Image (cartoon, rainbow, N blue to C red; front, top):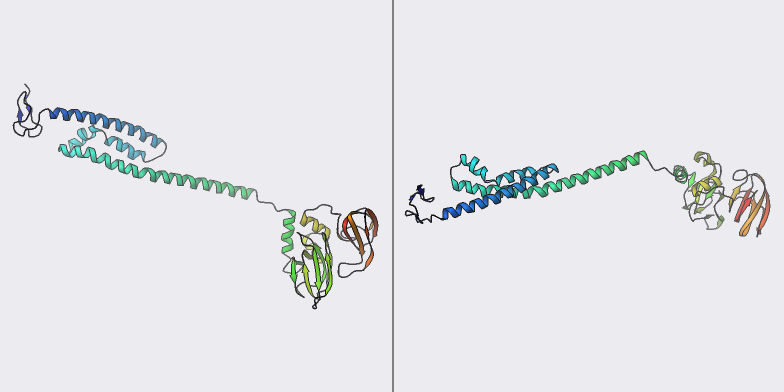
Length: 324
């Protein structure tokens, strides 16, 4: 028979001997150990093969931790330790220990790296998307700037003249804040009241404007205005010819012919006009603006009326409209 030796102590074994006569190790246990090792080897090869497939998918997807996964896969293969590492390490127990420790270390490293790279990739994608969106928005804004309306452009023009007091914003002012002169009152919003009072609180003149009109500032007392006051000398600087035109631009109106105070020869031409009431109508032909005028003609009417006006006069309409 072929000589056999005890795997534990190396003593010679006789045929049919069940226990080593030197160390009492069971002879059949070696066969059992060999079977268990074969089963474990098969399991390790299966796990390694699955890890190789996973690593290839990760590398194709651009996940660099697939490299760690590939190394982990090869660390599961028994031949790596027996046929390669075994040439440098003769200690069987050391090789067995390496087969357990190396895969565990690589597995821990792999588990730690996966979420880190996933978060980095997500952040990179988010930043890239944000940058792209910002660039698109910037490009859109640079190629398609918001175009101001005519009303907005006019507001900007008026604001540049406020420091010089050619334009007075809605508000209350003490004597001297608003220089003397003729101003167009422009309703821009809900406010329509204007008044000038002397130092004793007596009203010098006041008016409620349905749309626009003209006032004479005497610089004799406090001013209260709920509309914009524009000195008539500033019309050329803001590119308009009349209070009517300025009112239409600011309030986005066209061909306004209703309630207001029209300067004949500036807002409307001299001539004969037909008036039509919008409810109970009123008209007045005046020699000047509010605060410096006499009444030439006036009347309350329902239905229609006619009026003849001359250059230099002012036509005041309330709850009415006109046509030539």
